[in-house]
Picture 1 (cartoon, rainbow, N blue to C red):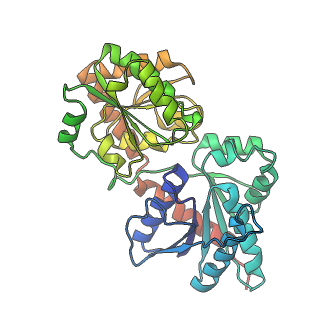
Picture 2 (cartoon, rainbow, N blue to C red; picture 1 turned 30 degrees about the vertical axis):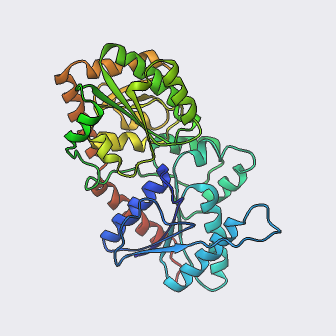
Length: 379
């Protein structure tokens, strides 16, 4: 099957999932064409089945903002026509689903029919999509996709509640590629981070307000007062400065390391004992799944799709948004006893295995076939 994948080429969850899915499909014999404005961050190898098509942006004095949607639509038309694609899979509703609809209409004038599958990832529905400026476009784009998937049951329910959706939304959860995320031994790195054999606590995010990175520091302070620990803050974004300042104010900055953006996150997770995710909103919690795949239990909020991933009292614990005291209590409970910590580590890994790429990839392949069969033009 020849599949075009449209995504944001960044370290964000939707871009990571789209890229890892495309790589896995290519390894399984499908011909995959990535179509976006720069090479996806996780597209770190090429094979005979992987192709990348850059969307070139022309600059004109007339435009205050370059018309990316028009450039992307034109590129989709070009790639579908000349690569003879069978299907387009677009990740994130805005603007990719609406652009795919436009490209589909243009291609129809050439007698080319191209089915479109749209995957909803979270903030395209829960935040951006609810904006009145975008809501009609999101609704239209979902209803006119040939197939729609959501990464969690919670996101599916929010989509149906927030928009006038006339079609099925299929849940296909996010996944983990265990060839990349596994428990690599990095004892020399752990000794450098925690020379006194302290517990290592980790958080990764894009440091937006919704991630509540300052709560991570507040939780760490309470834990560190009971159990000597180190905190690794991975990522970057608008809240990093405020979070660093809070660490200084609380007197824990000497035990906190801000590592910035890191591609080889599995190496950091491999030396971690606990992962903190105090987010106000998470459609799935891909970063938590990556931690669990490295035998790291998770203390998170109970928002969005997190309860579908992080099993309370098994792979970690769930708390209400903003309940720093409860999350601190749970973190201490996991970390204070070595045998208990090991049980949580084993349980977190076992839970992550349920989301093995080898289990999820066939769901996408079957869905592609279903969409193709349902959209075939007679004769």
